Length: 620
Image (tube, rainbow, N blue to C red):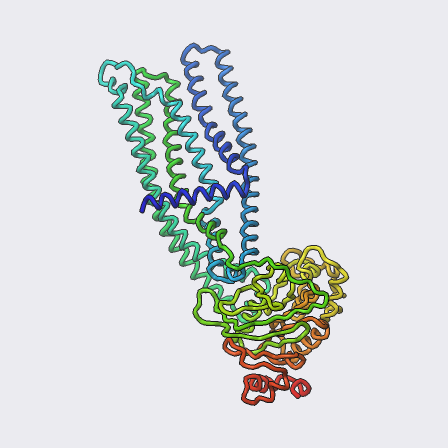
């Protein structure tokens, strides 16, 4: 069991080292060199002070004293300048490494299959990674810091041993009871006590660290709650509801509850830290006292010079400190592996989707045929089918309305069509070929989609429409005018270059929900794909307004194949075919007039339950 755990820790550490190198190749070497000079700095004064004191108490050679003092100052200056430069470079490289890590994780999120993006487990994993780095000083960045601490500790220990090794060699015995101070037994006994105290201190620190990690795990949960409320309070878009519905009492109560829970937890943490910290400080003080007694006895017996007292006491103190740092760093690296593993697990999320290699036929006539053949699907981790035995065929240039109650499987149908998910049973065909066999990117380029939960970003209007940094300004304007955004565009201070919202630019403009929907529709037009899908992007509008927008959009798209998805039926009358979804199945197909003739059908029921919202012409 322990052997397997050891192997796992080594494997995790090795992966972490490789990841650091990939993120920034020079950051670890510079961190080690920085640790080297930081470790050597105190030994310059320890060693040189001993030499200066011996000279003052010995021959008192002024020229030699000048040389020693000048050498001390010069070495301190050189080491300080190099150390400062390396530290500055280390900070820069570390910042680059953090940026590269964020970029790598963002690219991973963008490129992973959508089923993982939509999976709550993926969101929780990413949240844990972020919070472990912010709250626990854990993860890949922490590993770099611990490796720096380990390097500094090792260099300190090695240098200390070099400077103090002579102290532990037995000298000629001195008459009297003080002669015991020069024996191997005395030297090794002191060394055993000092190391024993250091190891016991490490044991206390290990227990303290484990308890601390436990507390920080609780902090992670509390912090997630706090960040939610903080983001809501900070978001100016939430200000209206907070004021109009007097929600500040809810926020105050929840934040107060959070503070009370956090205060209780931090008090427990402080008590634990004080207890273990106090014992550790006592042992460290005791070891420090023993160092002075040991070196003092050596000096009294004449085994060492007065100046050497400074050298040996300083070196032994540094050795104890360095040993503690080495052991603590190793312990921290091992504890950090649990956080490092979160990062590794995130990067190892693999897409299960077969991307295909077959090129999509480039047809000038846009003659494509799409067919769902006995398709069934259930979301990963669930047992209930969202779609069951769905079969439907659609030719290019046709209009298909997909209607049904909320939760009937309409949006899932579109997700499968766009290969955001693959069906569990059956197949989806494009021109008679399974869509899995097509090159994924080429297949995706067939679609322009506007989902109900479409997103606009705090970029320029043109970039939002183009979904790209560079775009054709005239085509952007043409798409906006086609969807009825012409008059609003005239009021934009910078035209299509006007930034939306005020998150990044105080000159940004706020847009209404209806305007946002028009921009999203313009985005679908600008893409100019042969198949357009509108998945309830106008659900926030009333049925008549939705009917008007769909009717106008129907004229704009011309001969393109169009899917209209809605739980309302105002968009159905101009469609070639209507598919009625209910509990994951297509229970009716036909055009508007055909379906209304079946008074026992679901479409008839839905239509007449909504008819009061339509005008006389729409309900005729």
